[in-house]
Length: 294
Image 1 (cartoon, rainbow, N blue to C red):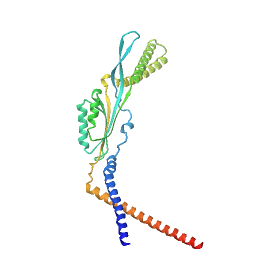
Image 2 (image 1 turned 180 degrees about the vertical axis):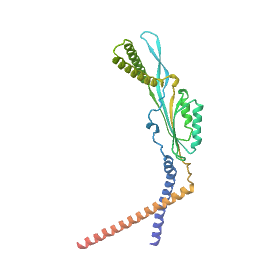
Image 3 (image 1 turned 90 degrees about the vertical axis):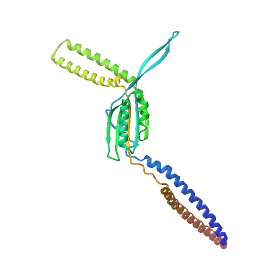
Image 4 (image 1 turned 180 degrees about the horizontal axis):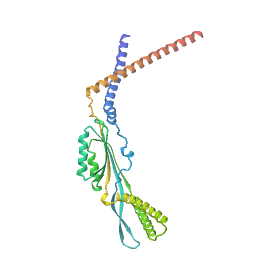
């Protein structure tokens, strides 16, 4: 009887020991994979699109020549060249524990690429700072600059968006021509003379049209080949230096967690065993009572 009990005890103990080792290994791996990932993803302000809340940011446009091949019926192939206008924007978000050094580094890169900082915003205090830069980059150097910027800090998000603006550019030019024609017509009417009240009203109308023409000129100026840039929206977030978790500490946490949960499993198993044992006794007792009544 004692030998059988010992056998069963050691057999059950080996099962629980194996389960304990599995729990221990699971918690150790969990600490390296999941916990480290959660620590890495935490950060103040990251994930927010800073530039989406800013109005009246400078719009940068670029152009490229597109050669289209066509053939006339029964004739030779003809090549037509069209000037495509587009807006190309890169968005880069990065985190760094060396904020001052990386801020100087990015501004040094801007100079080396002959780029222009068109907007700058500094936020926060030491250990929780942010800098947001809107950088205009020459289209020929854009891709190289975009890759070089990603060497700063730890990049959390990077993407490029390209939007065709050819139709918008053509519509602005058509609108400009229409306004210029209207202005010429108004000036011609002004030269004919007439009532003073009509002259004053006409003069006001001319000033209004000239103002619209100036505003349109500013919009078209962004498309001018002299002002051709692509945009890089760069956000740098400061973070505290990452604390390395020692292997001994990970072992300690895994061991404590495994002890806690194996204790819960043993206690639950014991309660379940007792409950089943009592239930069997009740069923057996009930059978005995039923047989005796018969």
